[in-house]
Amino acid sequence: MSELTEYRFSFGPWNISEGADPFGPEVRSPYSLEEKLDWYRPLGFEGVQFHDDDVVEGLNDLEHLQIMKRAREVGHALRDRGLTPEFVAPRLWFDPRTIDGGYTSNDAAQRKYALDRSIKAVDVAREVGTPNIVLWLAREGSYIRESKDAKTAYQRILDAVNLLLEYDEEIQVWIEPKPNEPMDHAYVPTIGHALALAYQSVDPARVSGLIETAHAVLAGLDPSDEMAFALAHDKLASVHLNDQNGLKFDQDKSFGAANLRSAYNQVRVLERSGYGRRGEFIGLDVKAMRTQSQESSTAHLSNSRALFLHLLDKVRSADQQLEQELIAARDYEALEAYTLCLLLGVPTDASSPRVETPATAVQHA
Ligand code: XUL
Ligand code: MN
Figure 1 (cartoon, rainbow, N blue to C red):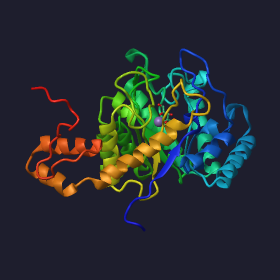
Figure 2 (cartoon, helix red, strand yellow):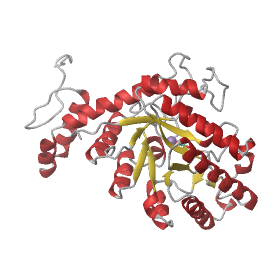
Figure 3 (cartoon, rainbow, N blue to C red):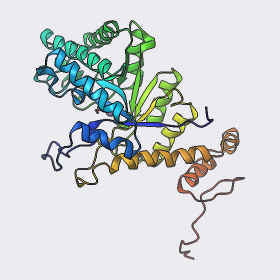
Figure 4 (cartoon, helix red, strand yellow):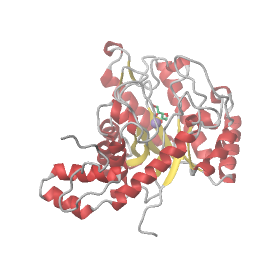
């Protein structure tokens, strides 16, 4: 095995989108799943993230055998193209029965729907060829505090995780925390919450986390520290790299587009922790801007991947001995100057790093 990690990249078919937002309709024509799969290899990706109904459209209206047949077909389509399914996530937030949540709905029949649908997602995952189930707990939260009993809700989420673990002893559950949107407050807002659930579950070794940059930012947290927390527990199963310009709707911007230094620190923590050496993917969850044309509606994917690789070069070329010396001297101003010069690609004096004034700057007396 080479010394350096060779990263593998993944994204989900929803990342090639038609550009609809809550204020306007689609602006690009849709590609079929198979057409989208054709994009993966040319763009430099080998992993495919799925929702259950990305694999089998109209899942709720089909019989078990029909569902399995379509999942098998998609499995073949992946193998024909040299692609790997990374995970399947039950899409629990679209159905009228989950308006007020799935596992945490106040209505027993609706909770049952959410559990049945999650079991279907496990069947789809196994048939398409992955043991990994992602739970983004979209509507497991509240619009107003008084509407749900939060303590009961946590127990119900734990019961759902346990049910999946017991249904299939081979699967792994990856919880993707997010603090809000579509709910006012979600019950599993951070990786700390997700891992607490993991440890409380019937099989902690099979429950871990998936961290999305934008979700950490929305929680007011530093994405690289969130990743470090999961890595310290050996529970970072995957990441959704993207970016987020402050506290607003979930933007899913291209990786590094809002905060290049934060992106650098995410790559740095992943690389220095040996993430990816066991085949973990560098997953993206990035949205094409509504303003993109049909022809350039995949550019955000190749740009995000390329940006990751540029930042990886920066991380690998950083002078770690110098970093250690500056830390030992507690000269964080110099460490910061060194980091900024590294990112800018401008030289700095290694014995005393500082940001030099550019030669082109007009000097005023
Ligand atoms: C939503 C989000 C989802 C999950 C998969 O914010 O990130 O797309 O990644 O369900
Ligand atoms: Mn995501």
